[in-house]
Length: 540
Image (cartoon, rainbow, N blue to C red; front, side, top):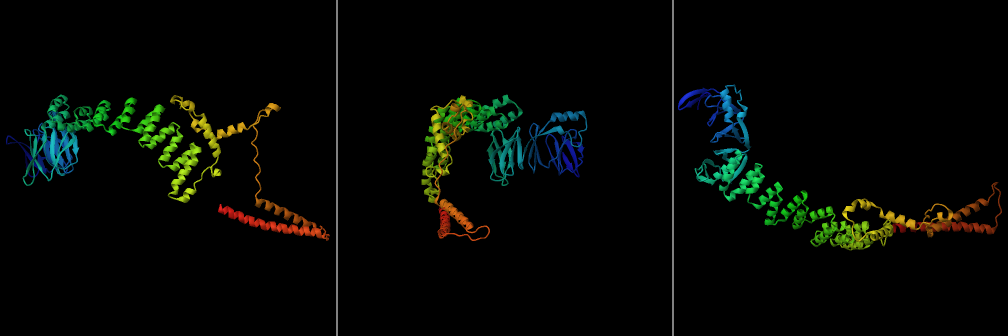
């Protein structure tokens, strides 16, 4: 094909002109291959060599077009990226033979986009169904079946010269005409090509010729194609084989790899998968080898295995896993051991509050330890902590709590009930033990009257508490009030209602005067006592 101005394309065959093509746009460039490519500033059109009919218009600004040897694949390079397309020559031949009009944009089904690479290509070439290229990031890559593989990183821009199949090497040249070569196995390219074509027998025949150090790369290629089982069969790296086995749920292969590597993380992963699939014995074995105490606690507590939980608590405490040890003993109702674990860890506030809730008899001991520890930092703060033995008025129902603890310790058996009896004990943890102790105490103090009088038995009311002695301030206040009332009564009696004088003896007058002085003195004492009381309250 020869482009003649302004936009006329003349086609030659055996050096003889056969056709002239006048495209409806300004042809800025031409590309050869199985179809004639004419590009404009916005798109590229492909024409059939024999009939000069437009086969397909593709809206991409092409910088280069390269066809594979068999003409089934097409690589279009542009400033935006690389496009790999599949060309259906049989469909195009049928459409052209029918003689129908293919339209302004051609036959849409003629090309099918296989893969798109967001890289700017400098140079490229086809080797079978593999496209090798160098990009603007100075990398030598090849793409097969939509998977891009980096061969090497170049130290400067280089351009492809060609590929020697006998040597399995690709040759590149730079702007200074320096030539370098890199190895790209032809057998590897053939294997990937056969896999892409779906030729499993041919791929299996080529596989033995691939070196062992390249098998992991082949396995990754197969995994990318969704052929995970085939990838596991040829992978050699233990870490990669373990990942593939976990994807497939192949516990047998995963166990083999874990035994070879002996990694705690792998044992834990297998244990979790076995637990999820219901293989409890395998899960227990793997979690034990992984030293996953939290996973074992979950399993033992779910299965109701009290002895296993007890042994796990001892193991966790010995290995320093205090959180697991605490939970194990709490599930077994070993409350004293729970307090000891908190104390050993220096968690004195938590120990004190835990004792207040579950073991009231240990509160004083835990508060004392808390005070000793806190005094090292702030002595005043440690003195502010209240001990129930010294300040019982600050701890509501503390005596009842002690009785409830004693009742619980007596009623609790030495052996825990089986997990199968859960429904019989459901809701027991929400019982109000203090309320029960109060009801039992009230029933023990009750007296039945119905036996003697024929009435229903009732409980006697609690004995009234003895009235406390009056405080000195209260007694002085009452005395002053009585004296004042007497003095007022005496004054009212000194004059009759008619305003007439009343005779009063000197003795009676002395008594009245003495009463007034006593009242005045009592009021003065009352004021002093009130002031003292305020000062005392402030001091408290």
